[in-house]
View 1 (tube, one colour):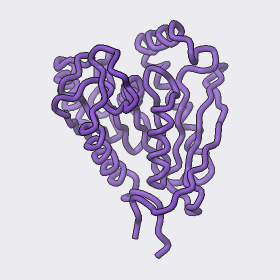
View 2 (view 1 turned 90 degrees about the vertical axis):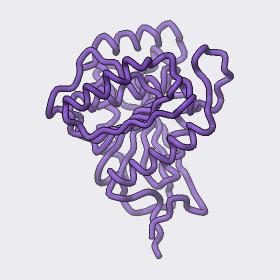
View 3 (view 1 turned 90 degrees about the horizontal axis):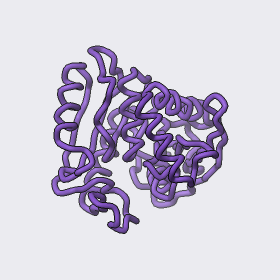
Length: 254
């Protein structure tokens, strides 16, 4: 029997330094050290603020489900904590999706070789991270599935027929002003034309960033939604169960 929520957890947090060419990146690996069996890996890609408490908290959730998790650093030491540099880096990634995909792939390569990881991988991204994992899928990334949570759906390089090899889940806020309905419709048309295996859930009334439980509501159009957060978490868990060999959490020896 598999326990989706084990009674006792020992989540180990280990910093990891890796590179994308000459850019030094500081990620974090998390796993439940009470599990000795090899298991699938989950990559967590942070939002616009960088590898913050939100991204770390989400990574811990996936580790508590029994997966080996890498919370990626998409910016690097020269950018982290500097708002102007962050905005410049995001703009550069938007202008060059190939660069963005290479940065995501660099983290996946680390996850794939992390001790304890065996079998398929998945990538889950929030806000900016959602855009990152969708670009990975459009580029034909070899992961079992990607999840975009309140992420950007617009792209200058739409997927072509047959290029998307991974399953896709998008969790979108129905009242998100930062991702207009035109972008949602465009994504549906794009993925349908590409013959991708995709699914889209729209959470009515939810704004942008609806999983950020520490959001103070100061940014227009951004707000936490307890309902959308809980429902999307259920959807993500179910999706991971489907794509990662039916495993939803820590393994029960009995």
